[in-house]
Length: 157
Image 1 (cartoon, helix red, strand yellow):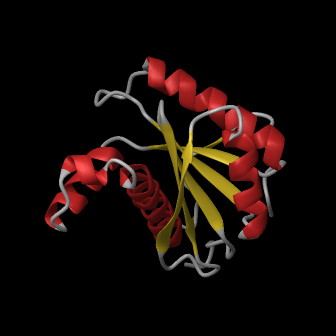
Image 2 (image 1 turned 90 degrees about the vertical axis):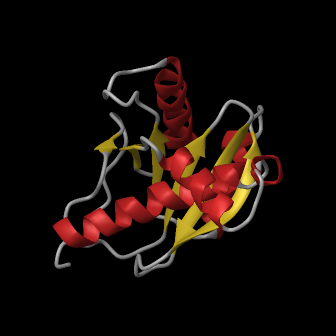
């Protein structure tokens, strides 16, 4: 755990209609849901406000790649959204492989007794929690930040 960077991070799961947002505590122990933001012209501004409100030092955006690791239309969309976040937040943004995070989120909600229909409003938040928790757990075990720093994004010490 020697290389673990303390501080709040936001996890962001980008969807076509909604964006799930999660955060972790300053010690990186636990990721928790924050909000589901409608995907519209105000999405980036709202997430930037959440980053300020929670005093986040970094944003991790889920990168939806195919199971074989290839790029998809959703991958390009997430990259563009992440670039917009880097611009409006002026924070480092990391792209984190999110393969199966939404699948894991649906499974967790099913296990909790929620139907897919009743989960629709929160599944994006849960997916953001899953990707953020995985990222902080990996960083704590390896001492290396997870994901690729978005080009042009400034690294925090």
